[in-house]
Image 1 (tube, rainbow, N blue to C red):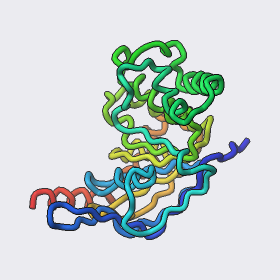
Image 2 (cartoon, helix red, strand yellow; image 1 turned 180 degrees about the vertical axis):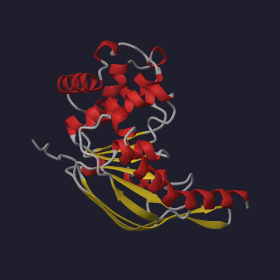
Image 3 (cartoon, rainbow, N blue to C red; image 1 turned 120 degrees about the vertical axis):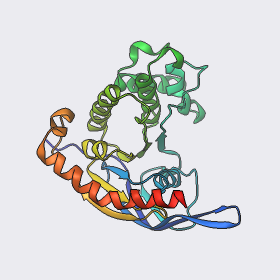
Length: 265
């Protein structure tokens, strides 16, 4: 049975981002063209400094493009996006429950409705028992699950994720990847996900967008052919997974090498 796709549709055309660095103008992004379907999980990979996070910040409204257009087809888009960073960003003086509900409070959602939505978000990420805990009482994985719940509780049209699992150890990262997929399969939100890991992009995404070294351009878009639902460990051990991972690395390797050469100049 097909799951209805309920997220935003995104259309990025000719996007360019420049900024000043001392007296020089630096081009961070150049001619970005990307269409994301409602409910699609798209992963961005590329060398450090290629503009992946900059693109996410533009989509989140935290930065402005220099030129080009972004069209997002989602009701009430200006306030209905959510971003999850590498660090959880939880307020240390608030409980998990208060952190998850903070966005609802700032938007004036009535207390009764907010309580129901927080309860549903905590259940979604498996943290109901830890609602009264504070961030320092949680593991790194639990803090990131709290951050994901905080993003989902506002029912965003699109979820923007900037290496949210990068700081975790290998075992917790595998567990959180599976957890994120479970949540996504239930909600079918549109997700744009930045990662340095080709393996993670193939485990999670519907498509992998490979970007060039600065200025960031789209070098190739790779369809991920693996059916869902996915068993991540089984999939990562398959020959097909290994071949596609190698194919993407061969596309990316030149850009990583070029980025390192540029850093040494």
